[in-house]
Length: 385
Image (cartoon, rainbow, N blue to C red):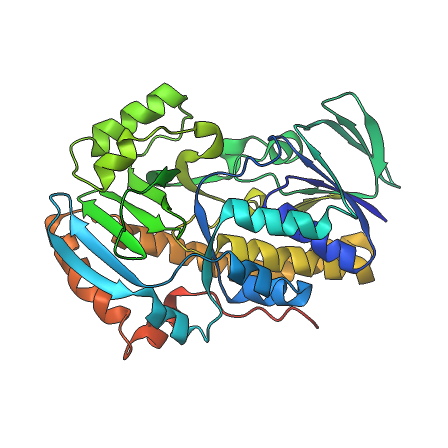
């Protein structure tokens, strides 16, 4: 069996790792240059943690994990709104939670698979033609190869999905926000794991990486879904956050390498069926939970593990159906959670800010954290059955 994985992000690399465990050969193609991953942090929660455990990668992820501690929230003038402690969430999760920079996460997975998996950077798919026995693929460099199956793991704006399943807008569910994230140097200590500021329709902040730099995350209400160039991105950020004080001001003064950063609409992807013939979608290409749920990477990892396991023991039509049957309920639940969280994450009024300042610290306190976790976190997916 030979599988083409389109997309070298967390979903694609995890699938390559899981297929490797079953002795299944795979090729990964990634349109970006090697090392270009986006300068933002990702969370590893129970389902991703359990997959990492199966692969023997937990300790490697822990070594690169960002520090967990207090989170401080202020208004746009610097006045304290509320605070809580990520360590309370850590204890409530039984220790199965960590934050890690996406580049570190991908480097660990890349090192795990690169001796056995052909990873081709700056490569895209130009053509896919299927017949009863396999799939013929032509790549952007003109190379033509044959595979048994093709997996689209090339993200929210999946080119493979648009090529074979339909236009991007057909599967798009905008949530009404844009977000931006990049890495910045930090002068002096942040004094917390997260320092954030918020106002009506806006939130921005910095996550302490622990190496003298921070990962930013800015989100604001915006119904547009068009893509913007680098100059337009900076202008939009200045329009929305340009008058805010430090630490936001220092982020906007820093140089931003948009090739190594993130700026896009916050939208979910809803594909009625994740497979078509010998092609199947995985991760953000199939569902995109958005960062609001905090479960995107972990759900993609669980999907990769399940897909690999099903392919290893069933004909592909049955394997694709079983993979979707097992993942679809979790995805549907977490997409609903993401939509619900969005209304609280970006307050729509001064009253909403006051309510959030009162409710959130209570929900994340020791007496209530387990109840909040059950309501908003993903349940553990049975991986082996």
